[in-house]
Image 1 (cartoon, helix red, strand yellow):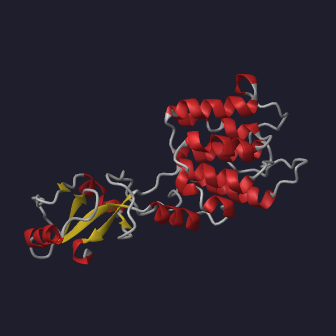
Image 2: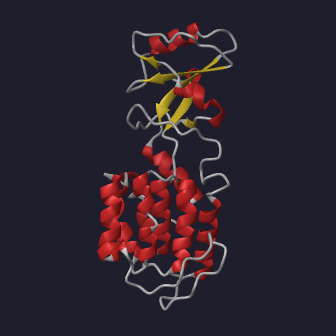
Image 3: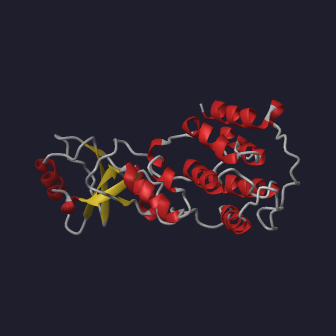
Length: 254
């Protein structure tokens, strides 16, 4: 599905063979040089800011993810509680956490932290009490829950303050390139190089490679996009990993 969506996006915007029709200068090295000015009057200061940030994905921490494990949620979004991200140092422990059903108490609660996954809604008070009793003294039992979409959007907006206002409410409904193909093409405008930079997504290339490639693509057309802020932030929303599972201390569950 991703391969089809990205392929259609690139071909539809860039013409036959996936090549852009704009003359455009040659790609610049990994966001290091100034973009070539274009007739569109692109914001070159914002362009340089984005290119520097995207190029930095290759080596430094990814935006919004310095201390978060990358765990997939097992349950749907819920309004309460609003969990904290899983600390990256606890990733393996959380990944191996047992599930808890209404009539099951997880075994092997060893410390100083122990994770359990909660199915669907938060369990009955009796299950919470049983988990508390099962944990040895000094062990903090943490329940893994799905992070609400609103919280994940909030965290993203904090890392990308230039996200256009009209995207704020739409991000949580955009899940994958199929849903984002049309707005990405519209935001790219005549800058086909940025759409071609998305082609590696179909091969499973991760954000650390895609960021520098997009920095180069922006430089190739001088950031002369129809909507520079919208394109870069939507691109980041799609390719950056986001913690979808968080935790709450069992002691705080009511």
